Image (cartoon, rainbow over all chains, first blue to last red; front, top):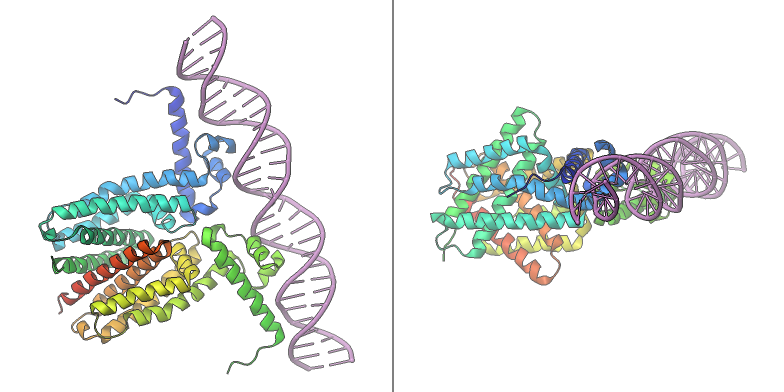
Length: 207
Length: 207
DNA sequence: AATTCCGGAGAACAGTTGTTAACTGCATGG
DNA sequence: CCATGCAGTTAACAACTGTTCTCCGGAATT
């Protein structure tokens, strides 16, 4: 299917990647709304004008980063939620999986957490849209569970959003946790919060 | 106690207020890390250098805004959580109270939601600290409830954080809800989420 | 082999930024 | 009433920003 694309387009995608990576790195200690176009090109080592060959503005670059960052989250969420029961062991494994994802893609997690409510409207909207898609997928996954018998679509979606938000909060806490002791505290609290939600789920009045 | 402070200090606090208010207004469509000192002074109508008489930097101003914004949230949280039972009517009233608060102080809510994970470290830390204080207060309030019999301190704090985070998420959703229809959807979902948490709380295994 | 296409470079633009220094005028405390 | 303190002003600084236009060299197309 995918042809070995020409030298030309290969180079273009290479600098595009460099721009995205440099931006993501720069966003570790600032918000997207203060990220300058020149700042990014300087970090990559290309002329400022080269930026326009790839993105209309930094906001546009931000939207591209959303796709990328939430793309990496995608399989993680799926793995976290899927599977029949939600026993204590499964919850513990889910929390650990979140922790591993934060270790693997800290910049992605930081970007999403920061820009979800950030100062750039198109980016906010893109994140909201993607998270809504995620919630919808989680809902579908939850629907397969035997616990979901008698649940309305709205209730399932409500629970899915609760899970997604909770996952994001936990990921953000992992991100800020510096030493191992604090990490353990986060793990512990997140685990118990999920357990409480799970309890509420089991006792939810079905139609 | 509080003397009628002199004309001098009164004027100073007046421009300080003006700076804070102007900054808060400007932060409606950008993040703190991109807020310029000159931008703020221009909006107020004073010379750029006057800024330094009040704040060391925009980050410093941000920290001051944290105290203010979370100060307004303080009584709201207290009212939301306090009271013995958490019946359906009480939950509904709590959600409505959140909605009213967002209507009353939209800029405050936006600021906290945005800068909680924002690009300015001192501000992030200030918010984290204040929210931890809130959670601790909520914990104390929860401890008074008869439902809290047999709950450990850690479990109560875990639940308190869950409530605080949930409240912030709901507030942020209200903020972005434009028409009345969407507002109703947010109200509905937040209500059911709190109801589910409440169910989990009732069935939490006590020691 | 000749021509078109196009990612990137270079230079220049008007406008902005944070920060400094030295000042002015007025309320304050002796 | 006079001297000090201090909020706010003015002017200037080097550095930075996004954006435009023109150009170059090499891959792609014919």
